[in-house]
Length: 167
Image (tube, rainbow, N blue to C red; front, top):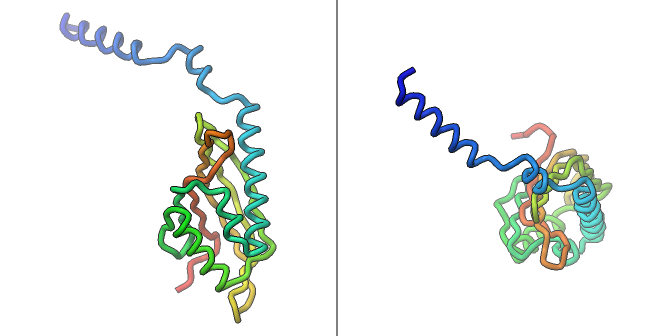
């Protein structure tokens, strides 16, 4: 190899090493098992409160788990941004159908600082007003943000059905 090539390799190696965090520093940034368990527990409690609110038809109570600037991406509907849009969208859904036998199952929680990403599955019976009941199974990803008071609020929420699309 020519001398200029060796210099370039040495410079790139030095740059790469300077950009890397020491292994001990990387470990300090990783959440502990206890932190992940605490976040998951708070998220599961919030999900239980959401289920109770939807079953009772209480949109206001449901919204207590959502940040003011949350974005709700429900299937077959435009994105709902903020409490006012989410409230209007949920009221319309609840006026058009009854939701029963609801179950959310948290499958995984990833934690990074004040952000938690929940992946899960859901199941519910939806009975449109004047229609036949149908069981829907699906999956979701919810992004939670830790608030100044230590609570967790939803900032992004998306779900979709596992049922085949019908036209």
